[in-house]
Length: 478
Image 1 (cartoon, helix red, strand yellow):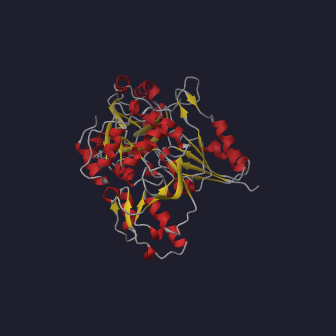
Image 2 (cartoon, rainbow, N blue to C red):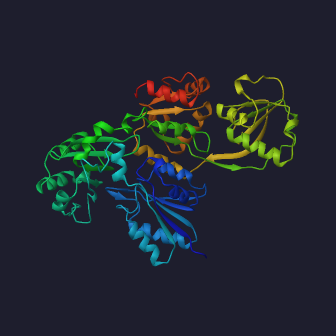
Image 3 (cartoon, helix red, strand yellow):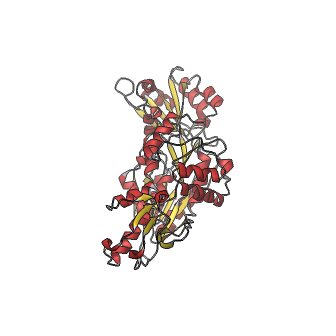
């Protein structure tokens, strides 16, 4: 069997949009992905549907897979002829142990590429409004591990060299050793008044910062119960933060949004919310299989209802394949959502919403294999949609890492799908949303939420992305 190939990819610091073009291309062709805890799981959604996903997460107190096991897996999968991606948070060459993994592959003469990523030690400070170098404040910069292989895990560093020769120091994953770090920097000549800032979950919408000096930051961290993953930045350049902080001023900064989804494609709504500074977790993740369809009698109906924007494309692809002249279809067209209406409009067809559809006349419902409860209708099933089981444990880990404060239901159909998906994860919807602000888009969605026994605190005047963003900006987080 021909050897596979391995891509050792830096996923960037957290913001999913900071992945490199080359890194994203590798994910899109992957047959196996081994991913770390600090690589944003949303990147996995760009992988092919049949891609095998293997979690290699590392916590301070335990490892899901030890480094030796990861090395062995990379070799094993590549020897099977697979395209393998090793997805690491930040840059793989900065405390990412990429050298060990590359050496293991080279031993077996397995072809590989190393794809750099944006390092957290640079990106997290920038998202906190701090460049690590500045002509007036810092002409040198160092990245330093805050723990090592010693028995007690305390780094054995050239403290005198750091103090004498480096203006800005970024310590990685060092909250537990912070008192030791501060004591040594002061003992070797750093003024105790030197600014220090901790950046927790840098570049995510959940980013938090804690600022102090070498003399008091350890006490502040204990009081605030600050934890990893955090970058510890030391240096006078931190003083620029007051002038150029930008990310934390974004309209939806601090919003950790859980977004119910009904389609398997990329969500424009999620993208719009992230562009305003929010963290967005989408659930459920769907898999779709296109089915062969028979559209021979499609010209006989008075009304055709599309259940999703995807069903529009699937329907017209089938019509074109069968050689049917579109002008022979005399039916009026309808959509269950604004997205379906838009998809039809892009094909030059003006459609109406389901609520405006008359009772009389023959009806064809076009869509996936879900039961939409439309009576006195024929169904044309264009695709099969099912939960992507691989993403259920990924979703559970995302919930554990985040502190969701906002729930968004974009459509009536999303309510039932979301609740059923939660059941697969053994999560009770009422427990999950107990202290969460629930927002719905549109009157029909509000009715479905109430029917499910949930309470919505309000909704935008119109069910559009722009109205939702404006609504979330106007109303504070519960």
